[in-house]
Image (cartoon, rainbow, N blue to C red; front, side):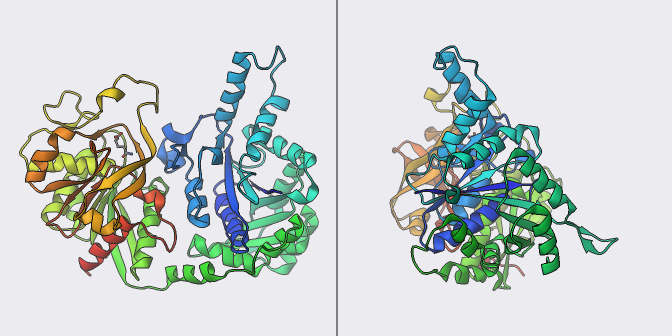
Length: 528
Ligand code: GLN
C-alpha cells in the first residue's frame, strides 16, 4: 500500500517546501522505505523549459527528457533516485491533457469543468508512482490562498476523503518571522495560513515552521492551540549552513517517528545513520578552491543550482570547500578578474548575450593553463574559440549566433532543421556516448560507455573534428560515432568541454567524475 505525504506552503513562497519534503523522504528512506516525490506547479506554462531562469531558476532535465522545475534536482540529490516526466506536473500540462481529451470527444458531450475533470486528472497524477514506491511525497507549488493553486488543494482534499485516513498525511510549511522592533517571533501569519488551508478543507497533521531563531515550547504550544495540531507536530526548521543538515534536525525532533505513527507504518529496517554521518563532511574542511562560473545570470545563483551543487559536492570529496563566484560574461573587467580563480567553468545557455566574454574567458584559461570546464554552450564556445584562435578561422561561429557564418563549427544537424515547434528541435534527456580509450575523459570516467543528459539544439559540426584535432582540441567521445560529445586538450592541466549536462548527475558523496577531475585540477592550481 502506498502512503502519501502532501506538502503545502503558506505565508510566502521560497520557504523550502521541496527541501523539507526531501529531508522527510531521506529519513524514511533510511528506514528502508522506497520514497519518491512529485511536484505540482500551479502555473499555466506546460513545462518550465521556456521560462526565464531569472524568474524560475535553472531548468532541471530528467533522464527521459522532461524540462522541469529545479526542485526535481533537489529530490534527486537528496533521495538519490531518478525522476521522470511522472514527477513533474504543471496546471498547463494538466489542462492540456483534459482539453486534448475533450477535443477527441472522449467526454461524450459533457460540460468539462475544473471539478471533476481537472481535479480527477490531478488525482490520477498523485498516484502515478504508486506501483514503484512505498511512499510518495507530493509537493504543491505556490502558497495557500493563491487562486491558481485552488484546483490542486481541492484535489488533495478529495484524495484524502477517498483514501484511508492512515494512508495520507498533510504537512504545511510556514514562516515564523522575527520582528526586530518587538524582539519577537510572530505566529500570526502561520495561524492565518492554516485557517486558509482549513477553509479549503485540508487539516494539516504537522506544521513545519521556517525561522531564523529557536522556536521554544511556549511558542510551539501557541501554534498547536491556534492551528489545531499536536504540540510535538509543530516542527522547527531553522536556517542551517547546509540544506543537507535538515534531515538530522528533523530526526532530532522525531519527525520520522511522528510520520510513521500517523501513517501506521513500521520501519523496514533499523535506521541507517551512515548518510547523516557522512554528510557532516560538508562543514569539515577549511581549504578553499576558488571557481569562477562565467555566465549570463551572474546575480541569481539558482540559475546554476545543479552546477553549484556539483562543484560543492566535488570539493567536499577532495577535502576542500568550493568558493564559487558567478561572473557576468558581459562585465568589461571580466578577464582581469579571472586571475583570482583556480578554475574557470562556462555553463550552458541560450542566445548570443555574453558569448564574447565566454570565448575570451576560455582563451584566457587555455593560454594560462587554468583548469577549464565547459558545459553545453560552454563546450560549444570552446570549439568556437579554438577554431578562431588555433585554426585561424576568423569569424568561426555557431549558427545560433550567426546563421551565415563562413565556418559553422557549431550547427544544427540537417534532420533537425525542418522542425520549428518550440522544444521540438532539442536533443533532450539521456543519450549514450562512447568514450575513446586513452583520453583524459576515459581516465576520469574509467569506462567506455556513458549516458548523460542533454538539452540543446546545436551540435559540434563533424567537419571540423579533424582540423581541430591537429591543433590540439580532440574529440574524446561521440554519440553513434558521429556527434561529438566531449572535447579536450591533452597538454593542458584540465581542459574539457561536454555537450551534455553532467551537473544533473551529482549526488552528495557521489561526485560526478568530470567535476571531481576539474576540482582536483583546480586545487593543484591553487593560487592562495
Ligand atoms: N544554445 C545551445 C544549443 O541550443 C546550448 C544549449 C545549452 O547550453 N543547454 O545547442
